[in-house]
Image 1 (tube, rainbow, N blue to C red):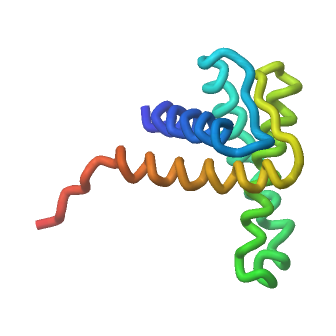
Image 2: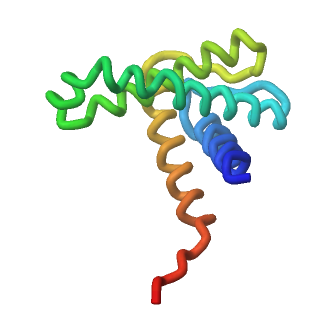
Length: 123
């Protein structure tokens, strides 16, 4: 159930990014955005850890700021795979991917905070 909830949050974050960021577009039906969010989740679960390991020296050298480039690459790869599957999600250029990844991250974080269940305090 938690996975489906995260998938919906990512789908909403991707939708917001396509509305705000020039260079990101989605021209498919609304339910197809959930499929795009699934592709995004798989890319982040499989490719992102490998990229973080391979770019570890750059991450250290830039004090972690290179993670923004990795996030942009993950969004771009999601767009490439989505186009291959005919899902209708497009990213044009690195600027769109970079700004889109920032928007997706912020919206996803905000939605996660807003929908988080309160934790019980230990007595």
